[in-house]
Amino acid sequence: MTLALDILKKTFGYDAFRPPQDEIIQTLIEGGDALVLMPTGGGKSLCYQIPALARPGCGVVISPLIALMQDQVSAMRELGVRASFLNSTLDFATVQSVEQALLNGELDLLYIAPERLVQERTQQLLSQARIALFAIDEAHCVSQWGHDFRSDYLQLSLLHQQFPHIPRIALTATADERTRAEIVTRLQLEQARQFIAGFDRPNIRYRIALKHNARQQLLRFLKAEHANDAGIVYCLSRRKTEEIANWLGQQGFTALPYHAGLPAETRAENQSRFLREEGVIVVATIAFGMGIDKPDVRFVAHLDLPKTVEAYYQETGRAGRDGEAANAWMVYGLQDVIKLRQMMANSQGNEAFKRVEQHRLNAMLGLCEITSCRRQALLAYFGDDRPEPCGNCDTCLEPVDTWDGTEAARMALSAAYRTGQRFGVNHLIDLLLGSETDKIIQCDHHRLPTFGIGKALDKNQWSSVFRQLVGRGYLRVDVEGYGALQLESHCRSLLRGEESIQLRRDTLKKVTKQQTKTALPDDIDVALWEALRECRRELADTQGVPPYVIFSNRTLQEMCYEVPQSLTEFSHISGVGQRKLDKYGADFLRVINDHINA
Image 1 (tube, rainbow, N blue to C red):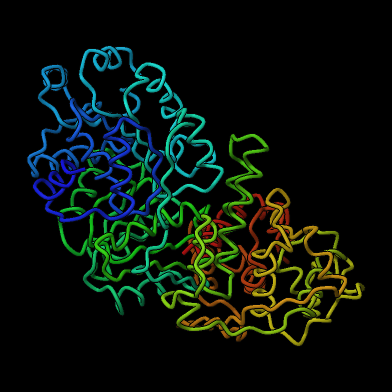
Image 2 (cartoon, helix red, strand yellow; image 1 turned 180 degrees about the vertical axis):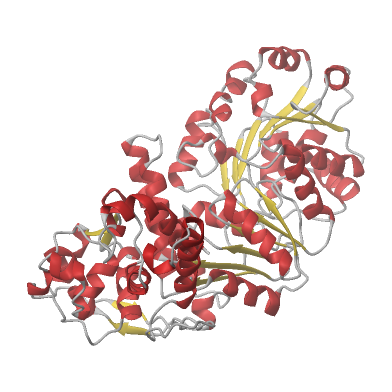
């Protein structure tokens, strides 16, 4: 370790290791294997860079981050480390040059993409070279249960089989117990020492709020706290990343989109600007961020709910790598849950995989709905206990106002049960409020004992009750049944009165009314109303007919209240016959979905 400390000081400029770096480095220098879980910014890279320099030969780093290899190699060369990389971006002459340098013993570190490592040519090359160690970075990519699965990682067991005497280190920032077990099995690391550092990032402030106008919420957050800061905004869809980036640009921010559908040159340019310029915001899907080593990212914002707690932790961990104060900010809504569950239902995974993903989504939603310290819940998910509340999350800084929601919850569950568990939240709220809508009358639900029993709460309050019941696992959303709410077995004791429940008291801001010439009810969403009117006007202009010929104002108002999510739900709107359903349904549903996702 004297040599390791000397390298740490002379090459990297640090005086001492942060535990457990010293133990990990000693394990590798002595020829042992290691599995390392360390939070982003915790110094994982040193755990293989220093042993690679201390041991004879070249350290080989397997990394999925082709777009960042050049930056990683440049950073090493700046320190005087002889580093290079092999991936698909190089021409044949350059590849030959790098390979010869490896064989000549002229490299300290070589970064290789996993798809190149599994090629026979590369394996022959490595068998002829003197290798100090193998480092498998972002090791969670090997797990099919993980959030960044890479199929090429499944073949990395070949390292143990073909190079059994060369030490291996697998590293990741996020892996729950199941993912850790799969990493060990697939990489044949059963004999490796496991180092699980604390997951806490105390400098990051976690804040989660309900989505009511996501763009304006984001704008207020940025203007108030991060007007000139670098940050990342995560969205679920590619289209949304581009729309939000353009919109932020109009608000005076330097914002760039990033998703897998953009040309490679555009992605590289946007990533390069983010890394090299100050105050740049990247609006991205989950395709962006792994391996990003920018220390001064001051915030990570989510405009959509992440699929898992692991994904959330990994993505938020890209903020504040320098140890300075940073924000993890997110807005979410029940519609996010419905969208994610639809994506899961349509995935190619088997039923076991879908069940696990469902549990993980429920855990993520539970983190959002929790009324106690978020950091305690987040750390507990990874098996890291924190005895005291953190004092640096929204629920600690502004304790949640709760109320006894037991009776309201029983009414909500009863409404779902008595309607056959075949209807969505809007219909159930109408039932509880005693609204005699066409759908309520048509289904004969005005005769049910639950009709009108919930008038003590308003529509927003009932929406909050249903959302929290889904979040806590009392109800589930049937994505194949157009968003119908169904009872989970977990709800029985609550229904029977054997259990009580404290609910979060949500204070939703009322929709700000915009300029409109039409007299509207007080509780209507004016932004959606205007968007529907604009759609109607465009269709009317195209066909040369008055707007009311397309749909009446009353029909548009019902769309605002019912917010249909499918053609089947749209067909139940008053004034929508089969011909208009076929002719206009898709156009109006698109407007509604765009509004929900805005």
